[in-house]
Image (cartoon, rainbow, N blue to C red):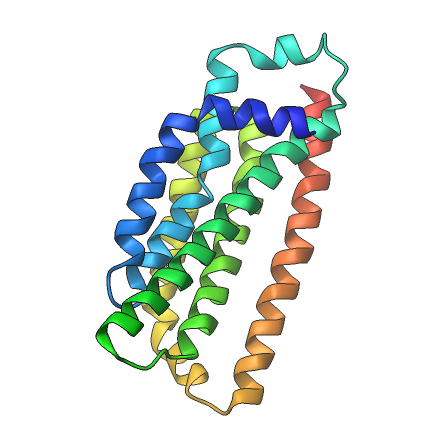
Length: 202
């Protein structure tokens, strides 16, 4: 799978350089609202890699090579995990640097917010990739856009309630974080299993 990861890296290297600059720009904006956008955007990098694969007929070539279909599917998920994780780390480091420069206190609540956004990004990826493996990149992107729209509407509808929950005592905040993390892990596992079965059908 390492070779597949390197293939994806070299394929989208130019986009990743632009993306890194974008992340640094958003991460340096005070607050975590722009950083959250960068983290969500990071979950789209596997879609970019799949678009190049589809355009170059990579799946046909891969069928003649000694790669298991499970490894091919997992490489896209791992690409997303690495992208999301690195973006979150860069965002936190940048925010700490900004706080040190401005001599302001670093808010621990920001870490909680980042964890929530990471879970949302993982959930978006887990829902989108099976659609792409089944219907192709274009329809998969439509599904991704629809999920973002639903998430945005949900945030508008329940944002105040979520904010109220986050103002509760630390045990409640920890419980919410644990529920989100466990849900993201379980749904991603299910998503991987579905994607592998779908990919084998194609």
